[in-house]
Length: 466
Ligand SMILES: Nc1ncnc2c1ncn2[C@@H]1O[C@H](COP(=O)(O)OP(=O)(O)OP(=O)(O)O)[C@@H](O)[C@H]1O
Image (cartoon, rainbow, N blue to C red; front, side):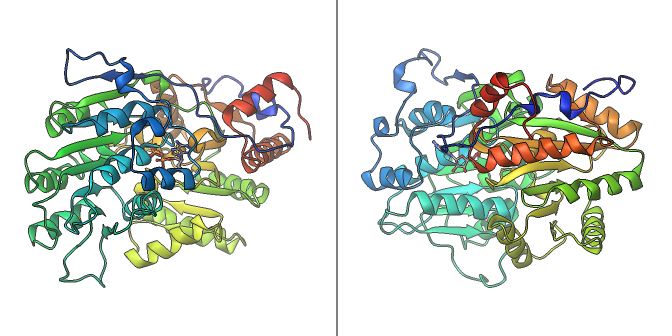
């Protein structure tokens, strides 16, 4: 990010001005990144071919599970799947702490391990997944069901707040839930924990955060069998949380990312400098005048801002949906489902949906408020998770952050410095170039262009094409 005194470079100057050819839809290619593998067994060689696979077939999966993967159109494992799966599936089961960029297929990695290890003839819970939001828990449940669709007898059960599921046992080989509900249900013996063999924490750094869900997750774990295989996945593991993660999942095999590999090259990170709060809203409206068809998520800091923004945007004639923790569960389910199926194109939300949500049509993430911790300091992890709602599995996407005063500008500059990335300034006095850029990314995304296709094309074609 340039200093505030430097004249901002307009989007017209940016890389985004390459022309994208229309043509056949290519297979998506994961962005390049390196992972570091540290094995619990110090004698073993982490680079041994035993601990990496290049195809799903090499994993000796059950045929019906392999069929499920093919049905999902997964042609080959992603990098995290290549490295994590042999370690997860190895016997005797070992704990794992694994980090990989957003949208690179962590869900499939931990789901395949569970689907491989469960006994379908036994309806007692054998694997438990904890996720930080009901939306993410429901999404993970959907992935497991999709992947296991040919496994006869498979039952996957949600454990999220549900008024229709009172005083009933939770049956099913795999339970996916949020920590509060799971803690309550295990304690009251509605979830029988005796035969649980696997515990997965998705978004593990968030789940182990001592200021937030850490206490609940710790209590759940204390009620589970001692030798349970504990699997922790996230795109981010700040150092202090990693220390606690190592206590939570002792002797774990570890897969980590280099710090500078954290941001995804397919997500074009831009920012817009506004003249105060009212101007910020006016610029947002103007921006949405350009954005007619693509799906986007607008992140704000508080529930009150989410509701207010919804109200004001609707009054201006925009069709938007709003989801925050203030709404009841079933209402939240309706809203996210509407967004997933494209009925609502714009979703205004808080950090409740910052993590994990996978809606491939999202081409744009807007940080209307820059993410900060409760004490007001910048929150780079949340920034990374928020922008990771676009650019999924090698797709292209745009993350646009609004700054409106010295404080928000500094917070964004600190976040950019943290990830050693440059943010490109959008000149909102030059709406023509903004419009061109937005349309180009939307078009590439719709055509299923991968990051590589787009970057290659940009190198070949330096000038604007429309
Ligand atoms: N091997 C694969 N081949 C093709 N697509 C895949 C493969 N693995 C996963 N995907 C797809 O990639 C997308 C992102 O996967 P997933 O939601 O698991 O990402 P993630 O790493 O958990 O991201 P986040 O950190 O945001 O939670 C999904 O739509 C999924 O279907």
